Length: 194
Image 1 (cartoon, rainbow, N blue to C red):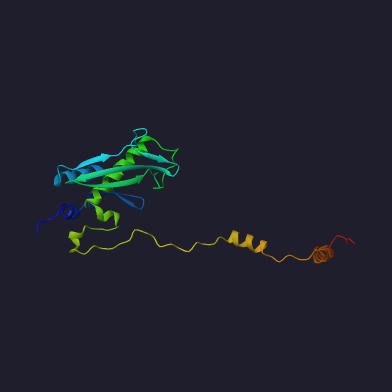
Image 2: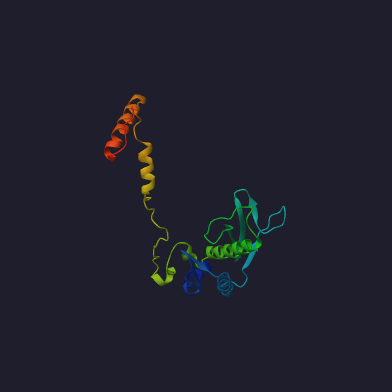
């Protein structure tokens, strides 16, 4: 049985062409596109445009996203990707420019190519393509385990003060008088108030 296009692309080791930015690994869109065209010269990319304003993004109050499709041998895989800042947080629908749109289109293109097999293991947190691991994918999670939140001492003190039992008004007055009488004795000077 002959090898499928997905299997061919999935064997390509793209590790040397990736970049690490923060905790994320990126594959260059130019490299991904070049490798895809070597194996599938008829591959094509479609950047979808909003029909209302013909812009290459879709905007709502929830955010802004792009839609990119990559077609190979009559099969199109579509990737949706929100516009993101340098922390990979989605950008508010009023705070973006066309450079943000361009970056999102390139990232979505790489993801859509990945759906055809090239570099797909990057998105699964894999270190090596399946072929280099004797057919067994290595499972390494890129997600961090949630740690228990550390309590701040200042908050604990504040809570403790708020949670003190309230005294009755008569008890407060008695305590006030006692503390006023004892205060001069403790300091060794002053006089008593009655």
